[in-house]
Length: 581
Ligand code: OXD
Ligand code: MN
Image (cartoon, protein in one colour):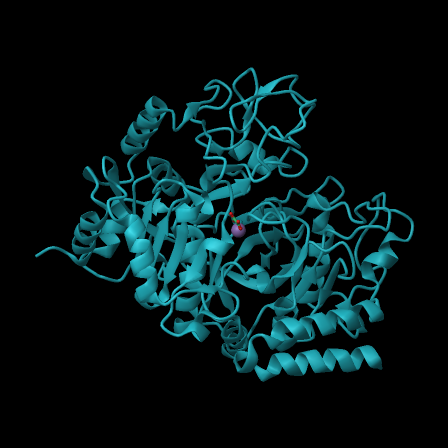
């Protein structure tokens, strides 16, 4: 008798017609063999092995460099279950339409069977997925990003409890590109793209879109959040989870290095993109990082913005769409030092600092193993996870949103997450820099109706006898002249210290209509070279601006109709009232 997995592999092979099928064991030997094969076909290029041992460059098709939200669908039998936050197609129609693209798509290619675990191998909170793919680039990236191969197969046994993901590069034509989610079958179909967020199915497709729906059904949370621990000079470590939209500095914050002025503090990385959080027996929220690697944005990364990741990516890293210097080392805009006098750009063309185009694609990426990061927490693979004391919601907002403030309680905190908005970035195709509503940084990743999602968050609060405190943060406030008002990066530790002070009841705050805002002296700014008046700006509550925000939030919430929990409307009305008084 074939196992449920063997049966699905057979069915998928009948559809896609690969030349051969390879079951991946996740071993180092297998990884090296795939790398050699890709070097031979030109899919990968070797980088300077003396300076970057085990590092390679991949240049993607120039039309395939970011997530394609307009081609991403949630296919539920009822349209309302996908909600206005998702593109929707009836499952049967999706199967027919995209099935036609999968038919024979692996002819002449190898189908790799990639079993993987999301989460620490022995954690009760971990889950199993299997990806079938015709892309060896996807296989090696999955080996970095997940616990892949033998361990996953062993944990799965004969069970049919795993998330299925079928992926084919197809012909990379954007007109024949679809990323389909079938939450009712715990199935993902992705065709026509090799880009990480579209093709590494454990990440956004499973850990967030299907994961969020599974979490709603099972009573946990799957969130677009980093997880970090802050160790204070007294030895106390407090864990924080923080949601930011793509390319807003989650990786940098997760690996924050306190500046010299913040003596005795240390930040420990647990995760930098996704958090799975469960109610522990103690009534606290416990988080695991379902991933085993980082798929981070390269441009802007340097030894000031993220020294830890700069060390992490010096070995065993796959770079995608970066430029290369004459020394065959990777280069991107915002790297350390002056730009090279000449380079080969991300598309393989000669480049100089005078070129009109960028050397690296703005969404160029590195895929790198988490264990190589010098800041990794000793707890990062703890099967129970780490207890979360604070949740931060942050967007990229030039105006209005203060540097930091705290919600009055859990329900108000859910409202703060639900009303998040942020300026768009290069991590998805489309216009960059426009403000869009992005509740909990989950708009592109919530695999079901967001009205129900807010309801789930509210219910979670009732199940937590000791819930985390909830905060909004904004590192991106600008002066009217267009300068950042806050230095950000390592200096964000000063804001985290205020958060710790609040969590441990060690510091007061001003009650304002929007929440608890620091007193002007609440955040330690000693030694910072802030613009005159910056602190006032950073903590100001602009009542007229907030009244406009309430109106815009109202318009956004309205589209969720009767799926919108009444508690969120109550919060909206209460805020409007406080702003009047
Ligand atoms: C990511 C993203 O790759 O959010 O993490 O786009
Ligand atoms: Mn992300």
